[in-house]
Length: 451
Image 1 (cartoon, rainbow, N blue to C red):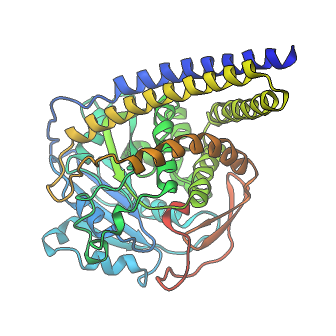
Image 2 (image 1 turned 45 degrees about the horizontal axis):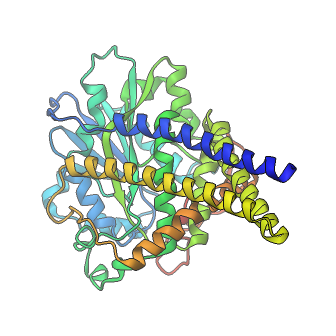
């Protein structure tokens, strides 16, 4: 009797879980429709783009060039590194001279070990620019591992720039779009090292990251989560809301933005249609560590972490119930129980495939509306039988890894980011334990295992 009741509880949890997901996904997909018309911003709407770099990934040069090819507005890119000997510096200095007037390189002053290098660098550069005689109207922030379109910046700023200065919209954010399957043309121009065909390798870790990131986007929109690789803020808001002071004692810079901006009486909104593409191969283990770091960011700095934890916990309970009921049915020879549980689980997975298709279609619409140069536009890959099998395994594996990563996020007290170890005492008490200049010869964790 109890087992039968648990079986119906299992089916009920799946139904409720699916219904809530359907509503959140539908709202997100409807909102993300890109604007039909894109207007150029006047020169007075200037923007400073700040990007903290450490190390030179294989696709860094192409991504930096993409940030220098922004159209429809006036802007200047500021790169910050922690050492002149960082490999990223040689990549920057080798960029085409035609873009030399559009960027400035900053070397941060290592005057504190109470926050991450990224937070320290962003804070120092932003303070320098705000103290200048003609500070920019907006600040935008980006990461070196994302490929942006030529109209990324103007689309990111439009929700703020198209309103009056007294508008309550003070922050806009884009979203990251990880390609689970390598895109041949997108990465063909990164350099000789990438032309060997290695980018066409299909790996399970990248697929898991793709599915988890895809599923997180509706939540990010619903909870107004700012992503550090693509967001912008009014300079006056950045100057007065207390965010700069917070960065100087923080590990992560992005998810806490909502708290400070809304406390100052302004709004955080998602910029419709703004997606930043990325692809990196990764192992399943490194992907799980990467997911746990994203959730750690939420735990430390975002007010909606309990909702995210509830989401992950419910999924964990569903899988524990599934394993228990299925094993009980098999061991007791209860064919009805086995069939009922398998049918409910199969229906839910088919529903998730439908959600996947809807989100993928939405992303295709957004990416298709963006202005990419010919060498950067990606082609839709052909799905072979091997790809379909890997995707099926990755879909289920993602649902298993997610709750485990949430538990890891709850117990994590140390974080290794690009070869630097940080100890977490409290969200505002971070201790950098060591420092060394990034080197290709040093076996640091890959970016997918970074904070």
